[in-house]
Length: 246
Image 1 (tube, rainbow, N blue to C red):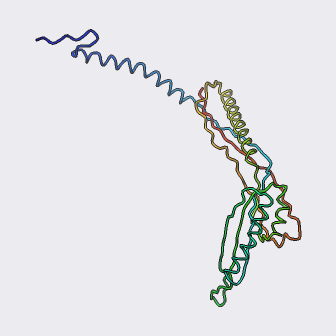
Image 2 (spheres, one colour; image 1 turned 90 degrees about the vertical axis):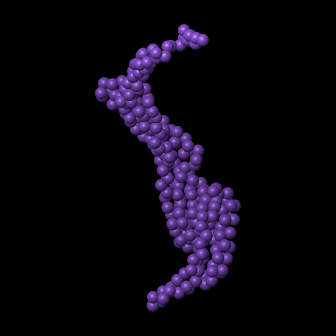
């Protein structure tokens, strides 16, 4: 019995070794120019970074204040600290402050040293809270918080509100992108090149730095005077890197 002959669309196995090299040659011929173009695009690129800065007013004061009590026994000072802290928190809630939270509760022994001998002479309790308030209200509120029972003002930092920061971030990004494009145009013009397309875009930074302004004082020193609180300005910075082919 004879085997069926191969159809016209199939190649005789004996000639397969002649056809494969030709197919590989065609594939390599088509691939090499594409790779060369891709390499050329990567080789002939300029990377440039632009910077944008927006300055906005600070409208919120972030405040940390506390109550510190010293006494003979741990129970005594803790109870008094809790009583005064509750009064301060109730006052702050009545003023509708934002982001009110307890940030610390401490009870520590107080030591004295006589002839290199350590001895416990009492205890100190410290409760602290933090909150946010509009800058224009901060001074009066601090004075009233002292009257309500606060004994320490630990610190104040000034920031813009979230909406203002978000808007400033977008504007800073636009400025950074425009700055990068202008730098690239200046370089290409000086060298006699023409830009083709933007190959990649990298946003390096769009986060506002928040350098705090601190105020620390004992409440007793503020009781007889109004506390002036003045906000300032905050910078929101963004950086963008463009890779441009030419």
